[in-house]
Image (cartoon, one colour):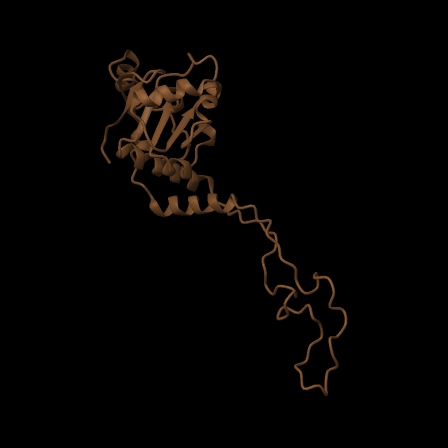
Length: 235
């Protein structure tokens, strides 16, 4: 991974304003594909309803009487017409309601998310919008216009701050777009999307500062005063 990673910076209308620097400990780590696979598998498993159910021979109605006597007829022995080998009988070893969720440690989920973000950042698939505070009311038309101005096509993941709910509501009715806040971002959605649009505030505590600004210069002057990553623990 490159030492310096950048993403294109846009305003709320999709006009390009420059670049924003991304922290290498979040967007520039070596992706751990095994952890990403395990976390995505667990996430998809947890999404299963697990409500499927079949009846055993004890639960199927009828079959309380022995269909014919044990001996003397030349037929195979049977005790119930609701045995699994009979049409209309119970199901042997069939599915029953169960919980498919798998436990994944918090550190593993954080590593998988950072790995997925690093994959997208290396491919130049992350774009940053300075703020959505100017969006007063939800308007899908404005969201579509912003995507067109940015030249974004295909599947999109929008990650905004909690107070930017207006933007989330504006994007959520667009086909092929997932809109969520920072706390709902997950590895599967990041890998699913072809473009990730993040508001500048979601880059967390100086995680990304526009190039050429006074804040960027101040941050560069204090390399040892880096804030902790959103995940807390290191890789």
